[in-house]
Image (cartoon, rainbow, N blue to C red; front, side, top):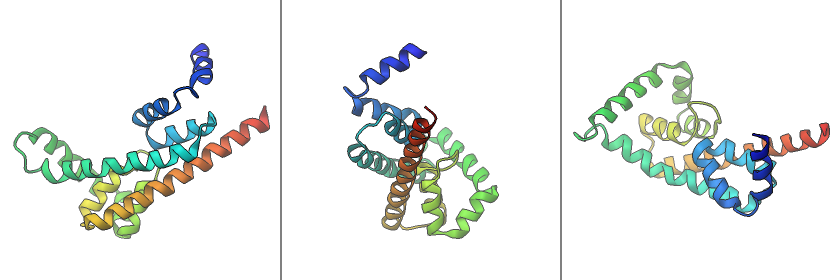
Length: 165
């Protein structure tokens, strides 16, 4: 394990974009940004890439929410979404965010915890009936604020590491 970490540290700058996209796909926005901060990658290039990749997810999730409930070919997936939706609606945390309305969509999108992120933000926007144009603005804003939060976390971890080393 130690050898692979050393190898990654030596070679990450050669293919940083490829590694960053792979980290984003595997671990999501938090893992990609914190790792980029820790490896001192160019965040001026990677930050807009994260927001772009988050934005690409929105139409896909909207398509799933709008079409899986009516498509015969996607009945199993439809049942899954309906069960997830029922469970989410019963959670107090989700109910509080739903009560916040548009601000709740923004907050849920920027949260780095299980149940937060773009998928959940689109779900909440769809459930409370936020118009698509408005929801895109809220979701992208949530992505930007959440990403900035992780740039700060990565920078704080890096400063702490240098402090104890």
